[in-house]
Length: 252
Image (tube, rainbow, N blue to C red; front, side):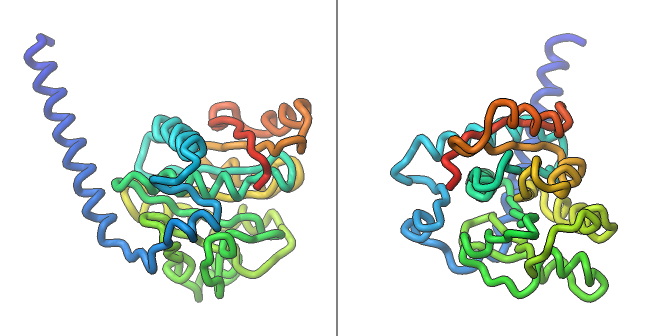
């Protein structure tokens, strides 16, 4: 193939990519966002945003986002975030990763609270929680997925609460309704990223099941919470091709 033909093909592909991104941005712009959160509210929620004082934290999550963008090979991408041990900042990392993805106006982030024993994302983000994921799995014939998805006041970021507090039972995440849920929400918008806030990978079988349903996995390590051996054991539970990285946090 001569250089002229190669140049023409590259130009054609670039044009298609630009048009795709523009159409994605137009589609996303029609989403209902709810009451926007102020900078003070985002600081109180410990959520990143442009112009925040701690630039290092913002840049760290943008860097993690870039790695995941590079791993994505399709429109729907599911990411599980799991702490190696409880109290290691899993929800902090999951919610801020979702916020970082949502900074791109051609992409959407759907944050799903999958910690059924200790759900808390709705409180962190100040979102009402009358029904959630568990309610849908138990009554998928009565509850629509639309009822689960909540605007957060952060552009392009949505939340699905866990719902009623429940002792974690692995059958929830191996169920047909759970597969239906993930298929639906991951394909609803172009460039949709679904972030599963999971329980500890070493303390709950749920996390290992959710890892199988995910395209990528991020492990969270809290300061002085886990030994190197425990981190290695947790990583060994995850398919190596899916392990996107290990994030060290202060367990916020």
